[in-house]
Structure formats: C-alpha cells, structure tokens
Length: 299
Image 1 (tube, helix red, strand yellow):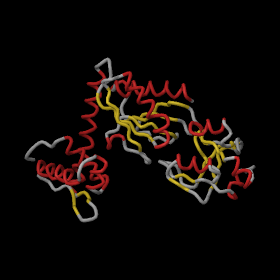
Image 2 (image 1 turned 90 degrees about the horizontal axis):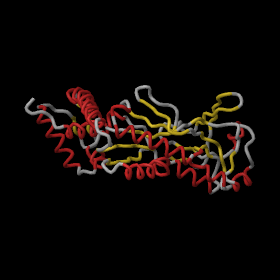
Image 3 (image 1 turned 120 degrees about the horizontal axis):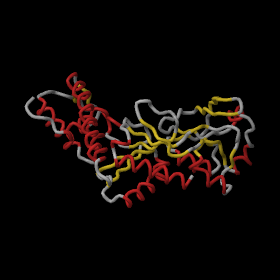
C-alpha cells in the first residue's frame, strides 16, 4: 500500500459498487461522473489495487474490490461509532444527522418534525433523504430510518414512535358505482389500488380479522410505487385502497373516504430504526425522543 486511503474515497467507492454505475452514484452524491471516477482511481492508486471491472454499461467488483468493500464497510462503521461517542459527550447534539423515510410519511410528518427539531438544536445539521426502498443503515451511513411497518431486521435497533394501522377505504363515488365489499373475498370483484412501496408485498394484502390473519390477492386497473398517488386515485373514485390511518384519517373524518370492511386491518406502526444504542449518540437520541413526542400530538 502506497498511502492510507481517504475515508471519503472509500464512501464513494462503496456507493459505486452498490449502484454498479459511476453515473448513478454521481447523481446520488450530487457530483459529476468524472469526479466520482477520479476519486475511485485515486483510491485504487493509494491501495495499489484494481477494485472495479469497468465496461460501457456497468461496473462490477474485482476479487480485490470484494475484499476492500467488506473491509471499508467495517472501517466506516467504526469511524461512525467513534464520531457518535464523541458527539454523545456534549450536552447539545451537533453535527450531521442523516434521516431516511418513505415519500408519504417523509413529506407529511417527518419533514415538518425535523424542521422543528432543527430550531431547538441549531448546531444540528439535518439531511432527510426520501427513499422508496429499504436502506442498509450501516452501508449507506444513515443515522435514522423512520419507517412504517413491523417487519424489522433483528440486526437493527427499533424504537416505536406511534401506533398505526392500515385499513381499507374507498370514495363514496366508487362505492355508489360498484357497491360496498361485504367480505374479504368480495375484493376479488373490485378494482383495488395496488402499491409497491418499500417492503410491501405487491398485490397481496395480509390482514388481521375476526378469524385471525388472512391473505387476499388483489388486482386493479391502477397500480403505483407511490402511496400518495394511490391516495389521490382513491379520492378520485378509482378503487379500494389499503392505506395507513396517519395518511387518511382526515379524509375519513371529513367523508372524502369511507372505511370499508372495518373488521380487517394491517398492523403497521411507525418506528425509528437505528444501528447504534441511543446512549452513544446524542443527536440520534434527541431526534427519537422529539419524533415520538411530535407524532403523539398529531396522531
């Protein structure tokens, strides 16, 4: 090895390796592909190793790249833990807090909550990334994932922020035109608005009802990977929707949507997911405590 590798170059290399593309990694980092390529070449020079196979369509890891990737993930995680423990020594949290969330929850609840958090702690720098997929907190350097749903990897720490259920709903105009489903089996004769969002199974609704857990396969003319779009379609009379109460509660209260098959629901609480204990990071600890109080007032 000629020189010790630069930590930022390691982060860039890991992102290129995960995305199989200099261009995609550059877009995510807000850099030019040429700059990203230069940083990876510099890392290869520092390590005196070839890390990537390059082609016109994609990049893949070499054998040495595979080993360096594993080593870099561990190193960056340890550096992050050191930074968090130093941060925890201070009374007031400071530094960069990286948060991810899904589009609807992120826009409706997480973003305004973080804006208020920033006013309380001016030394805290907040970055909110909206992701329509699950993220690997360690690999992607994320402090906190605010997510809906109770299926959480045991490798991470999860703190409940708010209770939540997904329920079935439709607009009055849809029900007038197509009738109201009376049994779970009736959904097979209705247009259902299917969402592929984060870890939701596509076209399969797993619900809890009077007889316990049941599964129903649904189809419809409209599908999307964005829950907010599905909600708007539902309001416009396009079908039956399975959606979180935090998102449609006002619509139900004001009669824009109607709760159908009310004996059935899907547990989908809101969680703060992180990789390190809260005692080791002041910024994550205050964020989790603030989000829990914020959600409690609004749900």
